[in-house]
Length: 315
Image 1: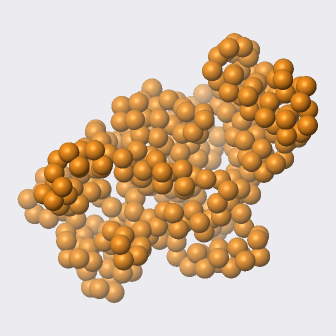
Image 2 (image 1 turned 60 degrees about the horizontal axis):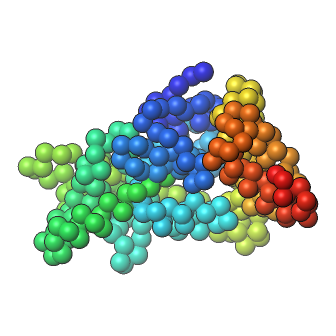
Image 3 (image 1 turned 90 degrees about the horizontal axis):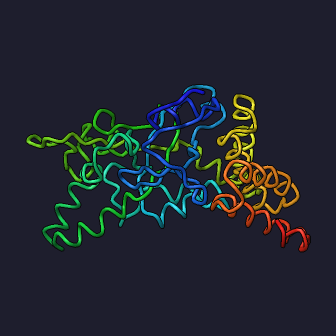
């Protein structure tokens, strides 16, 4: 078994290779489908959001992390959403948005395990805004409100051409406004002289693909769930091939497929997989373990949807 750490390396190469991520800094939350960083308490979506197109995916991508609130996180990871809706949930744009570097997804290279504290993460992402709000609203407001903005984290895989580290590379908006790298559209420097902590900001652009996504959407051909199912099936096959079915990560990968099948109302397929998951949980954890009970409940719900009420009562 190959253990991959930190999380960035796992999403960079290990995830698609079917590797198992094990790190004592993280625990897995099955219901939220997240890795929880124990020290900072930040939830990390267990599936990376891959913004590469088919041609890009032939080359290694780069992984960045978008930190956000729990409400926005649930909106972004809602599997019923179209790709365009997901992009709209992530992108920073509009008059009231803090789009200091132009339109795009604002990210950083570091996952939670590479931040020493939440305070340093907040300082990187919101230094100027927190200073302004401390003066205008006081310490209590900042201390209560700002940590909520980094409760969750979305790993994003992108082609390097579409990732703009603004300290060294201008976004298209910065070029149009003749702003040098490191200076935003409001003439504020990312790292002005005298600041001891270096800040990073990587703006992810979608290139021209957002238009193609909208065009495809009109014909109802491109749905996020279809992509998720394909990815989940591939992941399950990879992990099972490498590690066999009697393995926590393999069972977790199967569970992911079952959840998506259930959400797509493919209840018969979900039932077959959930029966395997429940049996494994019973064998490894016992009948009354919380994880076993959760999957029994999920299986019962699927059986109810299939009209198998008697079986559902004893699932």
